[in-house]
Length: 246
Image (cartoon, rainbow, N blue to C red):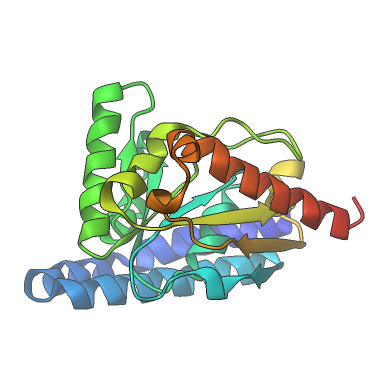
């Protein structure tokens, strides 16, 4: 429980103390958006690293050589923990917007930083709004910004299981031509979700698979790219589970 209080306290303190930084970032964005993208990313990555340190989280990253550095990508991952965002965000090599649920708009200051990082907010009950979000994400990729989606649509609350990957999430890649980078996240829920409200030390593994170019796949796999990507992540996940002896 002490770790939870420490982490939560740091987040609140950071958000309050970052108000002047938000103003500075807003001014910078009026003159140099590229510099704002880089500076906002650097600030948030520092805060995320501190959160992971305070939580006692160690992360083993595998396959980072598979992430293209010269073009934006669509990151696709399984999702069991709030910490999935922190764990994966600290390794992005370029500005990256995450697709988040619309409820995040209710959090002042946090939502300002999320918008600075090109995050988009999805209403899962509004199909038209969801389509607009995907179209905006496509435009961001075309402008050089990577996008990350957890296509299960919500956090999976069951250990060692996978929900369906929604096919609509993959239109970002099919319409922009960017590669898909599968991210397999193992043991993230052991930080927090498996024993709420405690935050405990945990070792997490993130495995980046080889980039998938939809246009290079057989037609049948292109039609079911969600299931295709899900199978890759599942196979990797259970290989890691076997290695861990669980």
